[in-house]
Image 1 (spheres, rainbow, N blue to C red):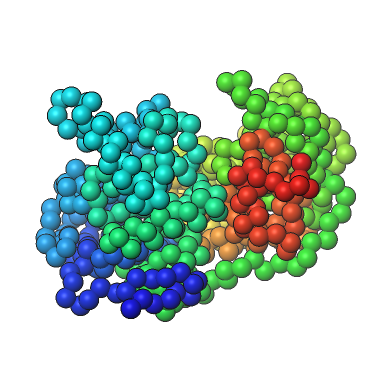
Image 2 (image 1 turned 180 degrees about the vertical axis):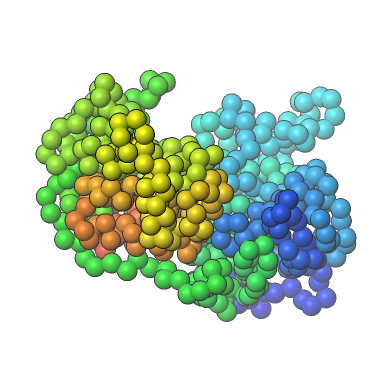
Length: 528
């Protein structure tokens, strides 16, 4: 007898008590030097189920799955597959045990075909031709059975991200995996692609496959899983039936306190345009046009969210505005044109014009990880008079004191200005970048992926800081691949696809489905 989940999706019946779990981990512990990544973890995953694993960054979930897939060897504990104890010394042993893994960053050769990628590493004998012929037959059978339709002779580089992910699943199924581990599988998918993936996972489950889903998205956990396990600080804190819990309860189990899962903000009171963009074109170093004649404006006291799948021109838009790339067209800030030729379009000139920039990649563009927090807190602003003792020396003691105050204000933990940036968690690294940029009281804040890789508790705080800046009358251009974030933070939403603006919407008058169509380049009759 089947049970109905809260979201209306059909869940399979629970396995009988006599059936051995597909996976059982007993007393798994793993340390990296003084850091205890996993501590005495035990978990049981039922056959033919979708089992979610959630936790904050550093909770130990990726380490645990890496042990299961043979990337790491546990310091203590044992692994049982179908009730039998197994030794998983490497990924080949995991594959032999019937385990497949679909990584967040795909392991595909882009200039190979689908067929060649599927059999890569699983060829039979010295002759390739018989392996390809057999793989082609099996590929068609698997594609038809699980709705994974992809063209076997298509090049990977010509496929959408969603279809590339299907190839990764096909690779695992071709190797006869009965257990599939998926790590953050929807991070690069449109909503429509994510929905299709969920249908595929449900089909796999209904055929008896066992799915382990690692995700930070509580909505996905509630929508697709049968059971969910919560990890915190290297330990397993709870395992519950999904139908018997709620996003609020799971968030509290993850963080150890109540978390507000919605953005609490008043209606915007927009003023005059702070940022005006007309007919902006951007060509990258390879001569590829990334931004194709877009028009945008952001007013004082509002948040304009840019939605879109990564790689559709959002990064280049931020980099031109931030002074990292050249472009053609017209950009005005507070009514004054800024130079786009590259001759004077550096970050310093942008900062002088009242533009602050939280880049998409905090490691490559926002921080120097080997430098201390107080040094990172003044990058880009170190020439400011308040940080100078005289023309030759910086006021390092004063900067450290300023950093200490900012760390307390932005809840950076630990609040130690002398700690190297690499020693902070992802969420605290992001808070350092935000503190540096918001503290300058900018007229325009550019924010790229503000909560990428950030713990759920830190997400709440970061959202509050962005809304507070808006309420102070500042203009904010927000780029995010997280539709939940775009819908809850933005006062207006523009959707980018292939370097163009596909349309603008008000959050209260649109839906994830409509935005998803725009993100895929599908517009209605009223959009340009």
